Each structure stands twice: as C-alpha cells, then as structure tokens.
Image (cartoon, rainbow, N blue to C red; front, top):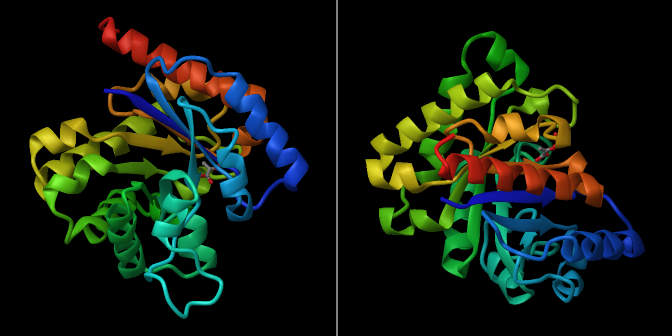
Length: 259
Ligand code: PEP
C-alpha cells in the first residue's frame, strides 16, 4: 500500500513565503516512489498554489464547510476546494474540534461533503493528555471514528484516510513513541474491521501526526500499522518536509522487502 505524507501549514506564512515553500517542496520531488504527497496551505492561497503543484505533490484543504453552497458567509465548501484544485481535505483536526467547537456530528457531515465532492477525506482523531493519563485514549479515538464513519457506505472508504494525532503531541515537541503510535494504529485498524470488514481495514491508510520530524519519522513510519504522517511544524520548512517524505519512502521500501 502507498503511504501518504501531508503537510498542514495551518495559519502560517504570508504569500511570498508560501509560494517559495510550495516551489521548494514541489521541485524537490521528482518521482512518486511509494508516497502520495499533499500540502495543505492556508485556504486563500490554495488556488494560486495549485499552479506549483505537480503530479507528485498535490494540494489539500485544511478543512471544509459542514454545509453545501448557500448563505454561509465565510465558509468554503468541499466542492469549492475541489474546483480550486484540491485533491484532499483534512477533517476534524483537533484544532478545529477544540478551538472551533466542531462536534462529532459536524465532522461526520464534513466527511460526507468531502466524499461527495470527490476529495480524499483525511479524518483526524486523537485524545488529549487527560484522557491518555486516565487510560481513556482508545475509547476516545475509536468513538470519534465510529461517529465519523457511522453512515458511510463501505464502497466509499477507499477515499478515506485516518490520521491519528494525540493532542498532547501536536506542536509540543513531545512525540508519541513508535510503540504508542503502533498500539493505537493497530487498535484503529481492528476497529475498522468491526465497522466495515477486514479487507477495508487492511487497505486503509492510517497516518500518524504529532511533532513528527526528520529525526523520528523513519522509526514511526516503520511501524506495521503506520502508513505515513500528517506533519504540522516540520512542513513549514522544505528540507525537513522533504526529509520526512524520504523517510516514508524508505519505510515503504523496507516494508515491501519484508522488513
Ligand atoms: C498537526 O497539527 O497536524 C501536527 C501534526 O502538528 P505538529 O507536527 O506541529 O505537531
């Protein structure tokens, strides 16, 4: 299976820097190898940065509206992202769930809109530190996914990707250990067997996110149930992001060679 590495720029970079970063990333990748690569810039830049995207580096939205088009001032729909050139969209990032109050129901609606629009839906989940310390992390994450996928037809799951992002590791410099990531990813895959079936669960890409950087990416990506990463801070620097993509390709190559 191909890995995915997606850079989430969040609300960072003014236009000149954003364009330079996109050019540096796009010109740094000349072949597809084993990783599908997306960059999720701030929405105002998305259509313009499409011009710098390539067959190997696509553009993604950081979120989409829970509504379709109409009187929703300030919102952008999944179809608009698609028509502006996006191939994928992040849904339910913990900053959207936390700071902007996105409920599980909102996340579910967005997943449907993303799929209706023909986008790859990268659905984020993750527990906070309190929940981890209380031993509630599995319950939290699996419940989030049960809600997000409750009304999705199994035939659409090939367009869905899961991103596990422990909130305590996002932007904190504190990374989940490779063992902690693998443990949760395995639990997510097992849960997907129950929600759908074994063949869908086996074929789904489950990304890790949370202070992933060149120094720890390979170890995390080498875990059997980790299929790439969602990268925040390190995606703001082209050489770091390219090194993480290289780690993903190395991990996938080793996996194909049987370890
Ligand atoms: C993220 O916000 O999706 C993320 C993984 O951020 P960081 O890599 O900075 O922890």
